[in-house]
Every structure is written in C-alpha cells, then in structure tokens.
Image (tube, rainbow, N blue to C red):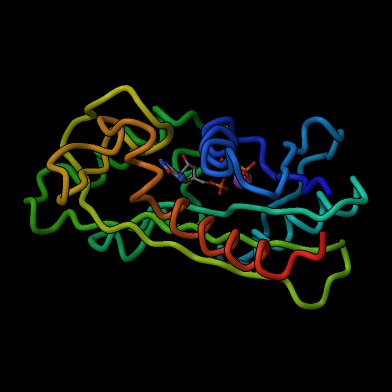
Amino acid sequence: ETIVLASNNVGKVREIGQLLAGARIRIQPQGEYGVPEVDETGLTFVENAILKARNAARHSGLPAIADDSGIEVDALKGAPGIYSARYAGAGASDAENLQKLLTDLKGRPEQERSARFQCLLVYLRHAEDPTPIICQGTWEGRILTAPRGENGFGYDPVFFVPTHGCSSAELDPETKNRLSHRGQALRALQRILEGTSTD
Ligand code: ITT
Ligand code: NA
C-alpha cells in the first residue's frame, strides 16, 4: 500500500526517496494527491509532524509520513529550531535563512558555534490514528562562517560535519544520508514498518 509523504520540500522529498529506494514501503509526495498546506502551529517538532501527517492522511485517505526538522544552535538558545524554515520571515528562501544565521553568529569563535540538526518523523495509519509511530534523529556539528558546497538543501552549506571535515553540502548524497538526522530517523521507522507489515 502507498504511503503519502506529507512534505512540499523538494530537498526532503529527494532524500527520503533515495533512502527508501529498494525498500518494501512505497511513498508518494502529497503534491500528487492535492493535499493543501497546513499551518505549523505546534511548539515542538513532533506536534508539527503530527499536524502535517494528519492533514495528508485526511485529504488522501492513505497512511502518511511527515518530517519536521530544523537546526538548533546552542549560542542562540536552540534557535532557529522549529522555526528554521521561516527564520528570516514567512516565505523566506533557504539562502535568506542561512544568511540570517551567519549574521546572528558573526564574530563568534568556533567553540561557540555548536549546532545540531533534528528530524522528527511521524507515521499515521489514518487521520485519526491514536498511536502514531514517532522516530527521531540528531546530527551534531557546528555553524561555519561562510557557505561551502553545492549539494543538499537548506542549511547544509553552513553545517560543518566534524567527523568528515567538510560541510554537509560537500558530502555526496549517499554519505549525507548515512550520517544525517533524517537518515537515522528513517531507518528506525523503516525497521518498525517492515517488521510489523502484514503484506
Ligand atoms: P514541509 O513542512 O513541507 O516538509 P518545510 O521546509 O516547511 O517543508 P520544516 O518546517 O520541517 O519543513 O522546516 C525544516 C527546515 O530545516 C528548513 O528550513 C530546512 O531547510 C531545514 N533542514 C531540515 N533538514 C535539513 C537538512 O537535512 N539539511 C539542511 N537543512 C535542513
Ligand atoms: Na513546514
């Protein structure tokens, strides 16, 4: 059975598609089902992921997966966090959000630039499912002083990956998916879904 992916973010959709290539579960982006956008009014990643998954399940009549994610910067007390997609204002581009982050951290030394990506995935069997499956991934790094690399999306050009000595936009897609918050969360979800599948 098809699962609707409750995301309009092309970077996320591409990564989740790559991560599930060859998996038993089949996903289709919500755009193909005419699912309208929902207001992300939650105060946590998990609340927003549930809102998005419920909206997609309701409008498609199918099970749904949503990804709510973002970047937390310690020197900014966890900001932009759940507001990562609208950090520079409603409708801001990835480039504008990333530029605001660099400006906010201007002059901060390396040891004050620690940050992490968070990814919360929610799976709902149907819109009223009272027991969502929730999986999480976290990826530690720090914020660079200028963008580097062309791969990925969002904040990738300013996210330095200490284990690899480069930005996450300089990693090839396969390596990013192996390390990333999203890769961790999706592999956990896949283990659960494939383990409980009845087909
Ligand atoms: P959907 O809600 O339609 O999925 P969105 O872009 O609004 O799309 P979020 O509300 O979850 O999604 O915001 C996620 C933000 O975090 C957004 O600014 C991304 O650029 C950023 N982000 C999340 N994962 C990322 C990654 O792997 N690399 C770079 N930036 C990422
Ligand atoms: Na969003």
